[in-house]
Image (cartoon, rainbow, N blue to C red; front, side):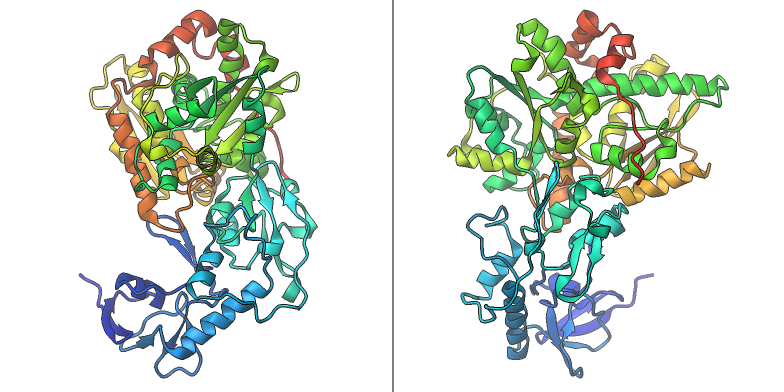
Length: 587
């Protein structure tokens, strides 16, 4: 039965909404924009922040003496709302001026300049003077970790980052500390971010409306390496980058720019342009073989086999379980992430074929994820101190560098990745979306387990944006039960079920970011627009459909890699180069 609608008026316009709808959402439904800095809502996901802390969304409600925050006030029958009275406009200007009074005026050099919600609102409300200047301002030290920079002098206490870290991701690395003028959103006990349980997922950066949280920028380091004639600099680019970077150049969300991206990278000066998708196919070979190996032992009655197996592609998720579930370190797959598999193969197999000394080879990655910056620096991914992947750039960093080089991505010609580390299948590109790693694994695991050809490669049951999903796949009469979670809060629920013995899954995919890598902390900012996430997701599956090969084990260059160098999946050499160990990082 259809819900009873609530009838209200907004600016003398009749509006019908469902019970529980806020004034902010009701206004949005009829095209009336109410400004806000603290509110964010990704419909269809678990991201919803409405603390009413900024107060910029105040409106006048007939019959009420005080102005009401639109994001936290629920509509009631007959309510009369006014969003544009002189009282409302004056209040908003005063609130914004007060926020600006405790904010640095360094917009010319701020990383968020031009994409700052505070700056945009100040321009929209025509605030060109600072009437409350002259008082004391916050003075906090800069906190720079391997992935994220915290500048609390720019924090406006919107608490979006706190919502992401505590409510959505359930990490608890940051929260409100102190009182009054000295309040900060920071790790407890005066710790730095690197000393906290931060996973570096970057979701706090993705939702920060100002420059209080930004990524560590490696573009200057890259420019120096590209200009060094003694270095061979190669790049790998992740699947989620190609469906999002076009947004930085005015293209609609979800526009696939793979060929243009390759051309831009080549013109920037990279000696070779490769694809992380190649390593994603390699990951499926190792991770899928590990799944089948564990499954065989499990079905043979070996109850000591750690089940379910968990995917290990996402470094933020890896960091999360090392901090929060150190008693379960034997459950995840030992397979490295595609980024790290690529680096290891590039600095061994490929470097040997090309005759390039490891020390002269610089491997750079372009990733949708800020945790990838942290992952590059992990000691287990180094040989005598030399990293397999030297450093990582976010999608946003690469877009800024392309613009700095006076290139317009829209007008670039298409070109192909270099081989052999640029060849990939459709299974690898769907790694960019939640459910994609599991679907890619199922395509290969099915054929290896049953010996039958999989004609329909789409596993629709693992796709979507629900926080937790499950599916069952028939393998010669055996029902393989798989689970998918995106967002670390959802991952926690699955892990607690495993810990308590309630889980019935044989394999689980986990991605830290809402939507998967397409919603990563290093992607172009979506400002809470779930349609952008959906457009990127659809584009990933479109690229998969257009690939001539769609199963990882069919990649001829992966087959060649095993024949010439690795031997077979899970071989001694494969374990040494493509697998890893996990560590207890609980505080």
